[in-house]
Image (tube, rainbow, N blue to C red; front, side, top):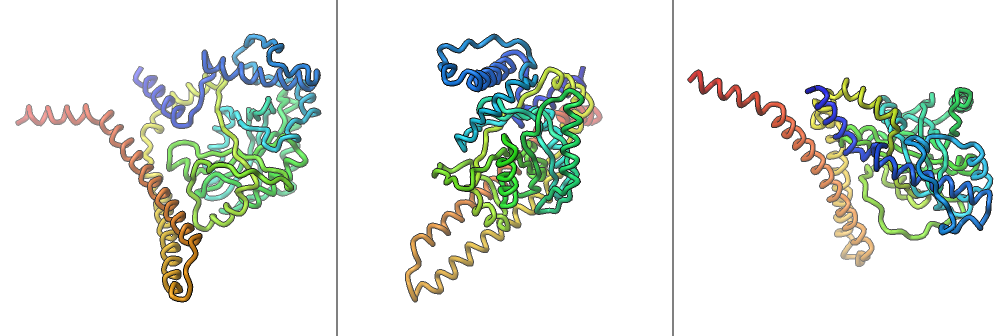
Length: 389
């Protein structure tokens, strides 16, 4: 009973931190109903034209099963591919639904890669304005700490794997790729942007997922992002600032040059009924290691790198300010330059707060576990000392 209770606690903690939705009861029904509506709507539009667009005349059937959206309708998908609504709107896809199975495979693979970039492919289907990722597989590629390149052997492996999957009854197509950014956040570099543009040009619909295994281990939750690029001749509208993320100093230029060439998708997770059963078995085996792990210890190297990056950014701003002061007697420093330095200082302050917050959370987690598991033992020892006295 104690092990089952501990397993449930560890499982709940992981699900809350990674915002994984259990596909049961109300949560499952809502997610399944949404995907079913989107799929039926796209199929009707592809076959019936504009007359089926009226939401008042559409008849939505009741949810026919817990795992209905895992089924692959080949005819409906072919109709959607012929219609290709994403060609009319560069911002068509807005959400990526990722299964717990695919998330687990990607997280394990990127963690095994450590500081070396790794790469894999995503299998799934488009449903309405969402891309559903039901599975993922690893690609045999050569990677470094800053890039990963797929050679001819990797493409041959991908084609053969996809063919064997269809022969085994899995009809999902390749709908994207994933790779890791060890320690420098979830975004697309210049090489990533070119790769994604090429894939979207010839293999639509296509999604790019980036995972940072170093920040995942330090933060205790999967650091992940999903992206799609704009067409080459498309000029993105000025949008409000997205959620801020820390970019290392040696990657800032690459990030800034290409950040307007793609957009991010909202990510939601789901589990099937079989996934739920398998996860229960896994938690019963590994819940002890989940609760006994310490982010304070495992993330020490990452913390050192973060502090070093903060110091380098501060030194750069300090150098810019000192340089502006030396030439101030010759001509006035522009207001834009001052705003630029203030903006950099503001971002450095945000980075520092983020590092401090993560460390506080890690230490609070350690204190909570100590109070939870060691408090009774300490009380017993204190009581025995009193009795002996």
